[in-house]
Length: 229
Image (cartoon, rainbow, N blue to C red; front, side, top):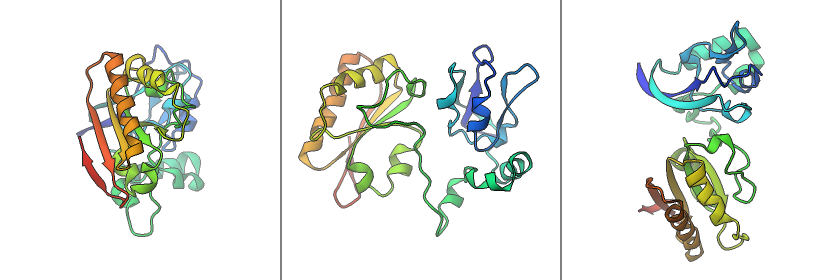
């Protein structure tokens, strides 16, 4: 066994709607005899948390603990048996398989929307999340954006130069304070206009009055990470 991310279910909060069982591409969740969501097997759960957004009662969360490793091949067979061959293509591949030559890169987006104007800080998937605040251009400039910056984080994107940023500070404070962000990573470009986003995030952390890790990742126009602070 190894320590990894996995879904945890609060039975008291679960209302038995079953939305999570269909949202899970790995068919790792089902309703038991009492109408409550349960993990079929730990090895079927990839820990990505795609089921979190559909739960109306916030009964699901991602935790880190000692569990069986995610077994891709066993999960494929399980999905074949329960959902048919056509559902197999949705099963999450481990990184080493997803990175094989010719394989499409996997998106690490686990929530929608992502634009700071559109998101609600009260959305359940932001609670206790590691937050990524990304300048719009960073995702285009950095080829490894999803694997290096987005993986394991919830994201909001903004442009400090072109957006109407009036509501942004309040939203960032709410994401950090009210939603209880565990950490904040800010991705900006080396260009001067991106400095406004860093300033806004640091001010939001100060106004929130919390002590959490804050990291600034600077992306160069050459598509490489130019530095961190």
